[in-house]
Length: 226
Image (cartoon, rainbow, N blue to C red):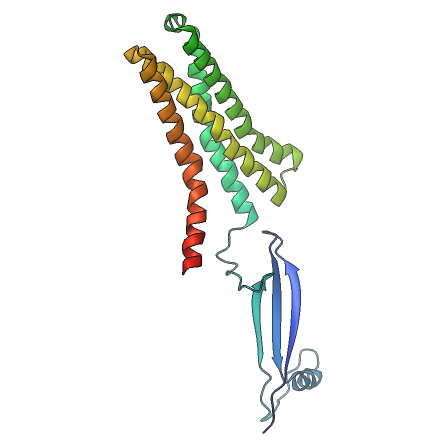
């Protein structure tokens, strides 16, 4: 009985969009038969190979760790991820700018002059924090247009994502400061105002940063247990 011989050819490459490395493994059964059959065929011709069995060819697309790669149709391209990141920043910016405007106007009112010095400082801290947040959120768009000439680059995606995430921290501080000042004006109690501000700050940071960072690690743990 004739034994079937196999040859394996490995092509190594890198995805131009995501930057992920991959290996293309091509396994050929009876490679001599394949070479002879291809040699008999001229350009643009098809020759009858009679009763001879066709060589069997198979391939597996895997990443650099040998794990099968996902279907390219379902993978999110670098261009789409950058567009999503910039869109997320554009969605947050109007709210931050509106809050910044209200905080600037509040300084000109009579009620602000009646606040204790401590809460005036709280308001100034919140105003500064919201200003910093707007700066961080607007930086990715300027960086993409000026620094990277509008090109979709993995380095820009990583840098822009950090700016968007970092911008949420001072925005949470600014909102919490505004809540504290409003509570003091409403109830006249410093302890209630401080408590409301701290609760708001913890809730904002928890939902904006704590839960998103905790969720992927939990998913990986559940996957490993399976």
